[in-house]
Image (cartoon, rainbow, N blue to C red; front, side):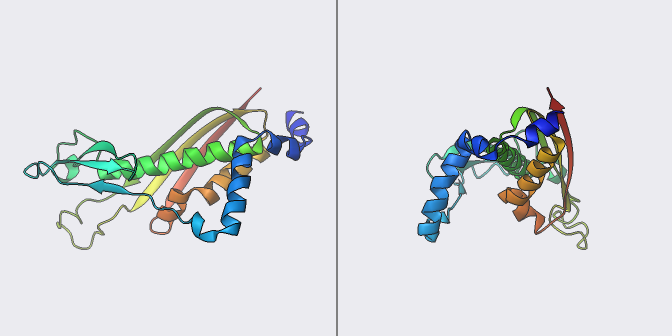
Length: 192
């Protein structure tokens, strides 16, 4: 009964209550009137300090905020792995972008999220980067996302729409998928 009840909801009423929908309307108009304004630039910068330490550095994330973030080197390539490494940051980018996209689309669809858990995993054979075997590519060979989404006031069909939308609209997911495969396992639950 709940899915029939939900499917009869007025989509216009849902959109009218969506903060994301209202913000997107403003952006749609802005970008249609000035397509150049839709081009953005994200940035991170490492200014080398303590260059005698080959295993640690600091990256400043975002040109304006310059949020400092300590970076280490993975133990698989000789580091101490005492701070997140660049592969961890790649996974963090994928997981956070996918989860943010789920939140945005959920809001537009009128889905009440109760819990999300998005875990991104990257797999690599490091023999290539260590030049042990030159036939092994120096790149992550695959990535995987495990997603748990618990929601209420929705239906399985709408949750499928949510996941399809997230796969289609997540910038980091779409970018990485051009280079390596990403598998996705989604576990959804509806609570009443």
